[in-house]
Length: 191
Ligand code: AMP
Image (cartoon, rainbow, N blue to C red; front, side, top):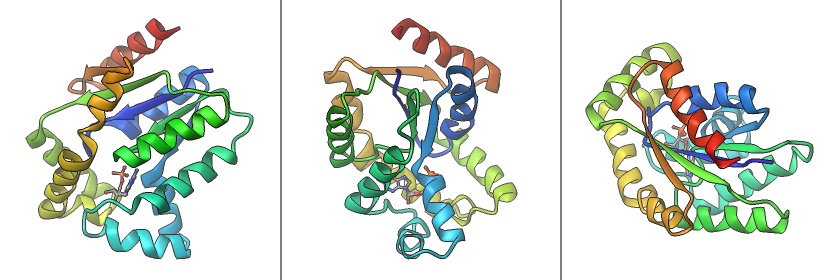
């Protein structure tokens, strides 16, 4: 079993790469952003709550996100492993994830960051927003707020995972195939 965290700023390509890696390594992909958007689309209570934060480019509160993530893992008892995409994004979430893994005799094997600079990411997000219609991708001030949230709350997790010897990073600029290749090298070196 292998459990991975895909790490990186908004627009770094986590979702795109997770879609390839889940097929290649037979893993269950959990994207907290996708689960929130599914709830928003379906008008659930969780969706209404999440929307009020997502629309401002802010993080959804920890407990709400942690409970949701735990429920997603519980729904997949047969999974051969997980790719966590967009989770954890805070210290509290990273600690909750370790706790969840420990309770199931599982562990996070690696956190792999996709690196790209802000200006490229903003361009990519604005392009994506035209196609996806995601309102948080269409407004540069919301995008910048998401980066601020990342710098303030998520970037400290690099040290968290480095101290566990689990942090890896790959260049997130290049073709989709090239980047999948870089990620695969890291994953295969773990086994
Ligand atoms: P994403 O699809 O990963 O870019 O996430 C879109 C938005 O969903 C983020 O800007 C947050 O508002 C919210 N979100 C997704 N994952 C998390 C998380 N782990 N913690 C808090 N908020 C999250």
